[in-house]
Length: 480
Image (tube, rainbow, N blue to C red; front, side, top):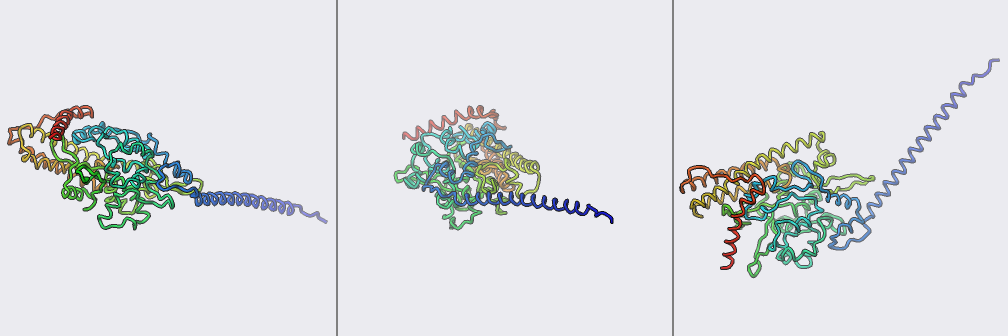
């Protein structure tokens, strides 16, 4: 009789062990998965219950909020970094006057001709406004408004109007914390909120209820309470400036709407030391320009690009390192635009460089108009003769500044910025033609001799005699 073949037994033994091994690996994998799920679940529970430490009303110390929200706080602390630099922005310190000396001519007689630096991260906001060369003994407390979460507490304590009417140094010891948590969040619910009155008041004057804004709209409006054009208005009972912070939105947010608004007031920020023109200084109309761009049209908020979501340990949260999207392309631009990071950056910079080219042309034309008006004055032209050229240079510079002062070098609304700069150049050209005829009536036979203002130092040296003469005239007038 033939002996049994042992092969089937061996084969069965092999497959038994194979199945056992696969099952073991599977169980191990399931164990890892279960552990991972439990870890993420625990982290989620932690995220939900971490708001157990009460945050007092008007708490301005960001580290107190950070106890409950460490991820957001740690990313916010990153706004102290000063090493990021894009083509036209970033947190690295940069001197706009050194890069654009013609600005010194444009702002002759105004504090911006002394110093105009690019903003650093929010961490430095209070320090930078405290140390700027633009500040003087006349600077109002209103200039603290957007620089610290200490401000709502002080407004609540002293009253809004009384806060504005004080001098800047009056609150010097009370403002200690840089822009942070309390500026945007409710301390009980963490819901986004508007912590400054000017934005609410601007909405109310337009018949809008800001409390009905959606969450997505609020992700831009919390930025809009500060990143806007504004001015100080009003008088106290004894005739002194009330310095009440006001947004000129009653007619809309375009450059033309602002022009109409200031014509109706009328409002003047300063008299130009070289040309004698009544001037308006645009601040940073970031929200207004953004509102006219494609991202706003598509419902993309400021936070979507400048504070994109990120994940850490399975938890999704908003990155509070508020910065240029070009420093975080993958999480900002890359969410919607499926191009390479280099392609995205190249596209943005190309748009910005075109805007810069138009900005420079308008800037140089306006600077020449100020100088040409001064030459007409030297030739004996009267204020009545110069009324139209002065009015045109005021409007041309306001349109230029609408684009120049907003962050992003035109990227937030490229077509609108191009249109506005074209209007600025047109107005300055009209002004130069009008002034040319005035100069011709007083014997001018050719162009003026343009001074050398190729550097900030040369430009500041050139305007100094004009500014000194203007200050002396104002001091004499004040004594009468």
